[in-house]
Image (cartoon, rainbow, N blue to C red; front, top):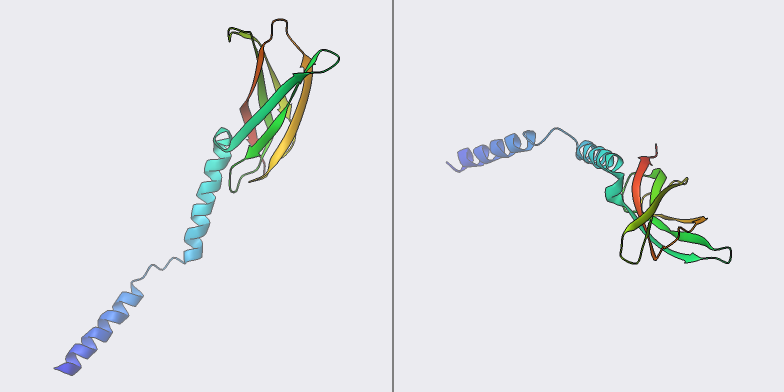
Length: 137
C-alpha cells in the first residue's frame, strides 16, 4: 500500500511539473515591457512634468525659463510644445504663445528651456504647461 501511495505521489508531481506554463518568464516580461512602452509613447502628457519661472529683463522682455522632466520608465520624448499664458491681475488670459523645446528628454531625465518674448501690456502673471510631445524612436 505504501508503494502505491509513493508511486501516485511521484506521478502527480511529474504531471504538475509538466503542466507549468510553457511560456518562458522572459517572454512574459518582454510582452509587459512592450505594453508599458506603448502606453508611455501614446500618452506623453501623462509622463512629462514642467515647472517654470519668469522675470522681465532690462530690454523689457519676458524671460520664461524652466525644466521639463520625463517620468516615463521606457519612452523618450522630443519636440515638446510649451504653452505660455499671459494673465492679467484678475486672472483673465491676455495672450497665449506656443514654443517648442527641440530636445530629447530620456526616461527619468530633465531638460531646461528658456524663451524670451515681448511682454503683453497688462501682464501680471505667466503660466506654462505642456500641450504636446512626440515619442522619440
